Length: 240
Image (cartoon, rainbow, N blue to C red; front, side, top):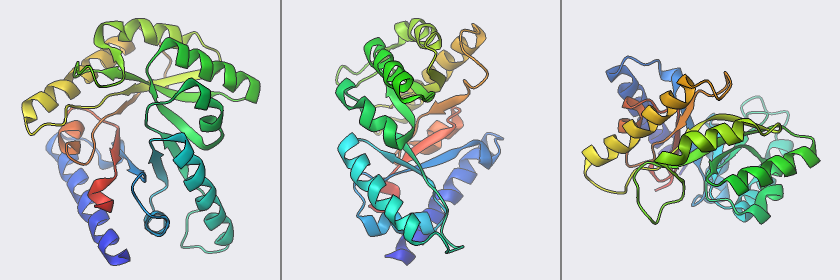
């Protein structure tokens, strides 16, 4: 399986580089977040061996289990020069307020802040833990009722509110495109996210760290890159 994973990762990296080249972006302007939610432990360890250190999980319980396992793996291999010294976890799925404290123990960045109450809970927990937490505002740019995320029209207000919270750092937006073969619909969703991102930045309600667009998954990441994504959340393209 290690050879298969290495080949898939190389194909993915080449595809990301090609998409960047099409729009004149440096390849390093796009960060790959490997989504591990369906992967067995050995495959996760293998992608770490291959140099992937930004990892994402959808559920807090799974995040806790996998992060503890990987922490033990890294500790066991602390003297191995071929294995990274640390990895960074991203909480990319819907986050319930009663799971915030557990999420903060493991995650470097929370992509899915979708309500004011959730932002307030993260800010409160971060204060009591003595942390400053990086977050992304999730915006429902597709308008699909089954998707989480603040409505497009509320994004500016939410960004302004989060920017006032002393223990949060709003560093960008996250969105999910419709699961469809219609590339025009997908592109329109990502383009709208970029427009909202630029509008918020132009209003100067956020700080200099506001520079990320988390959008694009295994089925649509080339379009996301073309529309300005800085973070890709990719799992099945590697672990299919």
